[in-house]
Image 1 (tube, helix red, strand yellow):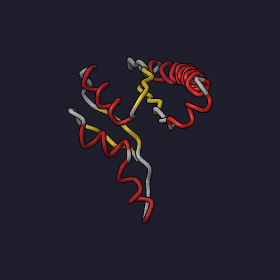
Image 2: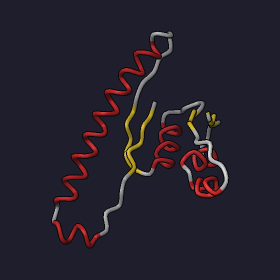
Image 3: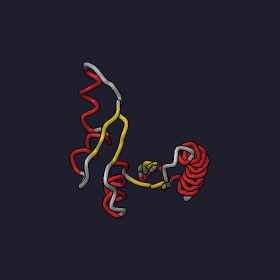
Length: 115
């Protein structure tokens, strides 16, 4: 299991006005999210391992689609399984830049998209 914490760009004008406060706050939020993921993943891994399936967890940071693609390539992953939203109408147009779409188009291995 992998989870990506997306890097949020902070405009330079904001960082100039507030010094390093925003940078330090961002680091604290990332650490909090990593701890949250680790706790959630630990519970899910135990559920999976109870069914005799080995599982591990990794929390990544950066651009979600690129992090997933790089992680799969670096770890010789055979199959990526991702969720997808069931969007209709105009919402579907907005989804064209979705993480799932980018991963499915650029991954070196098959991608299973689960609705």
